[in-house]
Length: 468
Image (cartoon, rainbow, N blue to C red; front, side):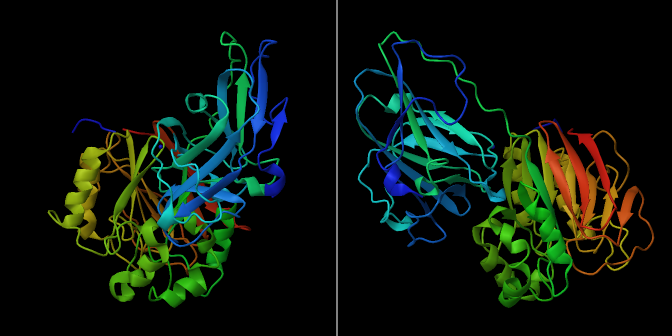
């Protein structure tokens, strides 16, 4: 198979600030005939498909996302310009929270509707984002300024509306005008004679490669989930789970009581997978209702998304996985369609494990085979409450340094440990006394893995492998 493989609102309203901007992006001074004016928005807000009747016009934050869908809107009143516009840039600042980080900062478009009400807009009555694309942002980090060139939409004095969408289920959060003058959005307009040379700019440096971090077998009445959630507080990126998110029965009450106070504070950036304990509630309704759109199509439990140069697949070991099953057929079609050069997949029950409590689940073999056929790099599972890393292998467990998939069992999210039985062939690292999370740094054509232990523990495991 050939290889295949993104508050002071009143004081700010209509304000014009001349002279230097708050971020140092100007590479050289403009000519003497140029002038720069900075406008604050007169209105900004966002809407959320998960809360269709809610208005966020007074929030200090603006959100853009694709799961649930969030769209943000900004409006500027440009006035006082006396010379032709030679350059216009929208500058926005990401919120200083971990969830603000995203692999996709959004696509920015002009809007014909500039009369929407900041305190009246909801998902149900939102204006259309119907104009030309002005620009887009790739990966964004928290507490950082970014800029988008919008010169084509600014012809002079008048009202400018901008709408922002995202194709990523790992959304970005920005500061709104209510956050205060230091971090509010800005429209920076340079004017001068038509022949004035626009000053060169320097694009902010890339914020780094995407991070995917998580574990499985997580939340119960103990303290392990509190400790691993504390680790996530300090690790930006997308959070994954490898099933059995709550114990013992995946009820709505257990999600509220156990998961929500711990890992739940990272819910907005979590892309989970279900486990057998989640399915102890009929149809895993507690799981699907809690995670909503972040868990993929309701009741299905398998979906995919992209992070940088990587295709990420979350699968469901609790429904049919046989050759020709809907899940197996979907997986093959999904892998055939992606253009990303690297692939990682995760679900609950492991195909390979040295665990004493749960034997290898051979029924997952068709999923492993499909991933191998399309040159995937990594599979992460849970179910056994410990950590284990395998060397790259074929679907039948033979060593394969050329195209083999590296398997991890990451069931150390917080629930009591299981022992090891007979050590399986190609098992390279094991631990069953340290809660932690497994962190992947997804480079353009390689990945780093790192076992991150909870406070007070010293076990570690890390390495780097190139994509196929």
